Image (cartoon, rainbow, N blue to C red; front, top):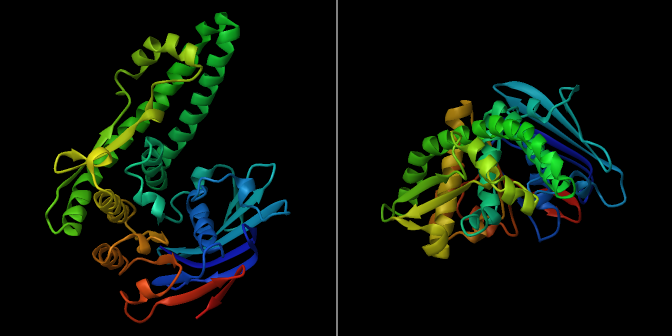
Amino acid sequence: MRIKKLQLNNFRNYETLDVSFSDGVNLLYGDNAQGKTNILEAVFLAATTKSIRGSKDREMIRFGQEEAHIRVYTEKQDIPHKIDIHLKKNKKKGLAIDGITIRRSAELLGLLHAISFSPDDLSMMKNGPEERRRFLDLELCQTDKIYCSNLADYNRTLMQRNDLLKQIAANPSLKSTISVWDLQLVKYGSYLIRARRKFIEEILPIVAEKHATLTEGKEALKVVYEPNCSEEHFEDMLFQSLERDTALKFTSVGPHRDDLSLFINGNNVRTYGSQGQQRTAALALKLAEIELARKTIHDTPVLLLDDVLSELDRNRQLQLLNEMQDVQTIVTCTGMEEFVACRPEGNTIYRVSGNQIYSV
C-alpha cells in the first residue's frame, strides 16, 4: 500500500500543493506553523474521512474560501487508485474513488490504511478515555467496514436517544417511546463491544512483545479492555438507568463510555506510571498497531509521524525508526538532525516553509 502523490486546493494554509512521495521514508522539516501537520492531516483524511486533529470540515478549508479539495493517488496491491475529497463549508463532504462518487464514508475505508502517531498519542495514557476509544475506533474502522457501519449507526441512535431524554423532561409521556431507541442501541452497541474485545485479545501479545523489546525485558505490559457494560446486560442496564438518564438528559451507559487500561508489572500506567513509562506504553501500543494491521489487511499500512521523534529518547527513537524499514512513512520534524542521524542514505527530504514545499 503506497501513496504516490498528494494534491491540495485551499486546504488549511495551502492555496495549492502538488507533492510526490517515495516508497520509503519521506521527511518534511521546517519551523512550526508552516503546514507540515496539514499535509499529514490531508493524507489521514483520505484514509479515514476524519481529521487527524478531530477538526470539522469547515475548519480545514483555507480562510476566506468556501470549499477545499484533496486528491490522493495511491497504489494498493499494484493497482492505482485516486481518492477525491471535496470539503464544503455548509454541506456534507463529497467523496469519490477513481472518479466515481460514493455515498457512504465506509466505502472508502480500506483503500488506504494509515496509522498516525503524534505527541498527543504519547499522552494518551494520562488523558481521558475518549482518546483511548478513538484509538480503538480508528483502527477498527479501517479494518472492519461492518464495525464502521455499526459505529455510525450507534452514534446516530445515541444522539436521537439523548434528544428524546431532553424532551421527556418537558413531556414525561414520551418516556414510553424510548424502548425503540434502546433496542437499536443494544443491536449496534453489542457489535462494538464484541469487536473491541476481539481487537484487544489480538493486539495484546504483540503489545507485550514490543514493550518487552523497548524495556529490554525489564517491564511487562498488559492491556485490559474495560467495557462500560457487557452485551448480555446492556439492555437491562439501559432500563435500570432510565430515571437517572432522564434527570441527566443523556445516556449514561453503553460502549460510548468504554475505556482501556494498561498495566506495567501489575501497576496501572495511568495512575502510577512515570511519564517515561506512559510514553513507552503508548509507543508499544502504536508499534503493535502497525504489526496487527499487517496481519489483518495482508498489506503494509502507511505510517504518519508528526513531530514525535523529539518526544522520545534515543533508544525509543531507534526502535520506532527500525519499524519504518519496510513501511512507507511521512514524518515531520522541526530539524533534520534527530532524524538523519538515525537513518541511512536514501530518504526523500522536503523543506516546508511559507505555505510551500521544497525538495532538498
